[in-house]
Image 1 (tube, rainbow, N blue to C red):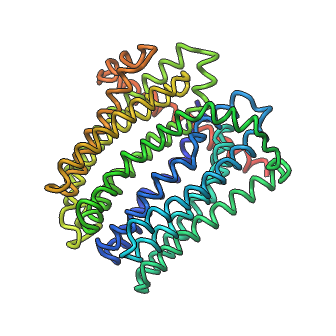
Image 2 (tube, helix red, strand yellow):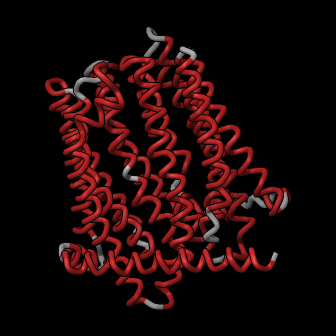
Image 3 (cartoon, rainbow, N blue to C red):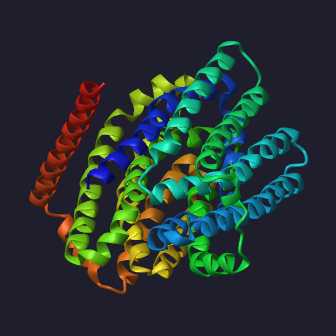
Length: 449
């Protein structure tokens, strides 16, 4: 448990940096370039996120699981997964540019923006090294360079805004941030594991990994589709300005998704091992996770709803007049998101990958239908409503299609406030113990010197 807490701590540092400094930087850029160009940028980000989901190939969870289950295949898994992702990344970049070229020929800014943004997909192929360190509960090896470069480039972007530099300059700076980040991560891995470990690509390994990940590939692309399709539909059925306002609100709301993501990444290796060694404790931990997810996300939704007008006014100003209303609706998607992430992780550990696929399909159908019906009249507010309903649909479907029947019990027990209070008390005891152990180790190291 202490390893999980430590792993989560490093991930939380990364997410908190993006939550506060990232939000401040992005709000300054949004005010600098205006809702029109901000909307075009978010169109490019949405398109590359959806198409780039193909380049992940569903390997983000499978590679971690395989590295934990069979560490002897380590080099073959890492090198093969990296090769698969690079090839898929090149294809995805090309698709993004072609889509924009054929649909936005009359606006060169769309094409330039998407071309630069699409290169992110290729660079993110090197997240395979991240999977390796996740499986060893050593995410600090990736988090430290990521956070360092992120903070440095946030300062550079703020300087760009203060110097009144163009939108295109800011785009190139964003690309440079990723280039430097992945150069550092790749260099660290090669330095410690040896470059020879990356030349063990096996076609048989690729076939096996894809046979395990194909359903997660489709589920992942569909998740991105219903997360980002509202932005593409806003661009098509409305205006870039309305898209800019919606994206500004969604950035605040979606930043909270980092919390369940951090827990999911940190806890997956331990859940896989615990399922084999202590099944009852494994189920108890999943139950606690789901219960804390529900109560924690509810508190977040209430606080952000109350503060939405004040918060968006400070961050975005009068250029974005409808952001507060959109945020006060969109933030309630956090509750089904938090719960769904926990249930999906449980389904992955159980090997029931198709459940995630079915739930995602149901969510995207709900999302597309509501957006198509309401965006022409309500704009960004319609997209926020669709987001909440679609995520609720996903969570409901995950419960219904669960083969084990255990998820229904998790959901019933998550409603008990007394158990939630006991979980919080236990969690703070674990955190306190972890901090005390860390301080004790630091004191011992200091005395030994």
